[in-house]
Image (cartoon, rainbow over all chains, first blue to last red):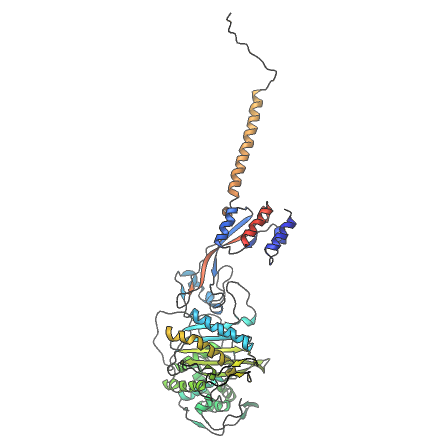
Amino acid sequence: MTKKKLLLSLKLLFPNKNFKNQINGKKFFYVKKKIPPEKLESVLKLGEKAFRLEEKIARVYPNGGLFSHIIGQIDNDNNGVSGLEKSFDYELRSSKEPLKLTVDKELQYLIREELVKAEDIFNNVGSAAILMNVHNGEILSMISLPDFDLNKRKNLDDLKYINRATKGVYELGSVFKTFTLAAGINYDVVSPETEFTDLKKKITCNKNSIEEYDNKIPSDLTAEEILIRSGNIGSVRIAQKVGIHNFEDFLVKIGILNQLTFDTDEIGSTQIGRWGKCKLATVAFGHGIATTLLQLTKGYSIITNGGYEINPTLIKKKDEHDKIRLINQDVSNLINPILRKIVSTKEGTAGFANVAGFEVGGKTGTADQPVDGEYSKKKINTFASVFPASDPKFALVVMLDEPKPNKDFVYNYRDGRQPYKGNWRNTAGWTTVWVTGQIIDKIGPILATKY
Amino acid sequence: MSEFKFVEKKSNLKISFERIAFIFFIFFIISLLFSAKILFLSYNDLPEQKIINKKENFRSSIIDREGDILAKSVRITNLGIDPKLVVDKKKTIIIFKIIIS
């Protein structure tokens, strides 16, 4: 057979490979990597002295990309370069015992499936979700999309592959209003019944205006109503009562302002700038402060678990530490019912997550993304939920990055109303809350029976 | 004089002992070379002899809370080709077909 014929045959056999230069050259080249044992046996039986077999140790990931952002990658020399493969490189090399994680494969699969469906509906560029046990910080599921198949090692320089759950730092908007009211309760400067009257629709601070998203919001509201209706000006008024020092101190206590210690190196830091009266006003409703989804989940866990310290973790630990209380017990007792009302009442913004039997509570956050120093129309829609609200066990935080309205999508209400077609507002309530509801529909029964 | 008399018959063909020994020696050398070649080829044709062992580099497994494996180290074999040693290309192509079928 001529060399020309040989090359033609190789081209037919391996259409994606070009052997021309290799076969004409003198250097060794791979024909097939990870050849299955049964096929290898056939090859050996036939005998061909030009073949070379190379035995090596390879890392395989049976679930492909399902845990890609958690596990991370290794390089050609089996060194961890990202995720747990990197941060636990020494342990993985030296120990014969497997590294046991807190995540649950079944939950991870179901949550990822709903986030993938959300991309089809809302055409978002990315998304993330964290499911955490609020009492011990164990992460049962953590997903960031897009993800990648760990078995196909690739260069991940593209920013779209950032871990949106731990590394991405975002202005998360109104989900922060829960912290504002919680701080007020913690320092005993407001209670849910505290009345705020003559709330303006628009105020200015250093020539920057702060407006209500919905101008129909009443001018007289209690602190509880401010949170349920997601009032901006009312939240500013609560923060002013708390004061800069107390508010900053509170955000440190619940882990928003201090650097989080985590099991992987892919971890972002909160950006806030200098505190002042205008910073206090904007942070009150979640602007002028950018943080990670992981820190938000930690904050919600502490606020709703009775005020105890937790540290988010992916590693299953054998011993449990003593509980350390960080904030007053009253905070959880008073905040949890309000979070429930946001989901269960018509004044609330999260009705699509009112999954029967799971007593979901939570707060929505719709934030404009800054582009080149200016706020754009691109959104970050977040929903921070806890359930069951009467005695929370789990925090589930879901975020959609740049969702778009879908006029053809049909919303099925959970209270029996006629279905609604079309997304008339690109808010968390119409996007992320819907997705969260779908997730809890799937994982709720598993959590109820397994945990 | 005895009637039994040994009469030496001399042939016209005159071959010296040295010459026979030389021819035998040449045949012996050739057969030795062929034997060595057969032995060499019989060993050389086995791909098992060409296994390149890379440094052992095991990492322990990563499992989820239920014990399901999320990452595992396994021994794999990569198949490569040395173009300098491709003799029977037709045979090589048939093997290629077997590998990917």
